[in-house]
Image 1: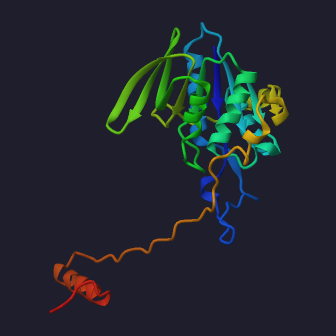
Image 2: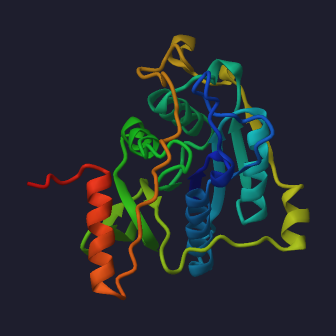
Image 3: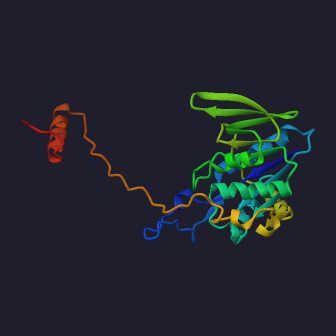
Length: 269
């Protein structure tokens, strides 16, 4: 069984800053990490392998990004992936979600065509669009299940426990299929052992360029993108409200009336 885990490298959430003049993210000097929800997806793949010792399960991590995204894939190898592919080329620069999904689809079709399952994080913490997994599944023509918190293999089927607004659903589908993974009670962000870290350096991590994909150049990167980000801005800082001590109702009422008058929120006859 071949399980692909599609991952993304993202900036640390608490270190993201926006250039006020250009409206773009400041990435220089900002530490990047493996997207946390992608870690949950990888953890799910490892659990499937551990729960099925009678099945040979190979876990392949794949990502599209700049050369430094190798570090996120190396993290995947440390956490249990067997091999990894990085689609990295200047021709991919400026890709929107559609161009990203199309590029990943071509990479998977050419280098891991006989996959059984694709796992993705439910969204990336930088863009938060959650569109790439759906578009990847549509491009590959396979069923998709979103917001899974657990997945179990049953012969040629995959059984998924899925989050909903009102609780959970159990959904089955035949493989190959794509599942996005949320943070469930059993999904964790594990720490690799020293042995895992050393062994990861000997696992294959292959860099794939645009020339190695069977796709027209005009469909890649900015040229192949149907949407473009015009600007990014930080939301305005909200002022804190006024807190009134209610231990003395009389004084609290006086303070409330004074506040309303001062801010011209009421009219007195």
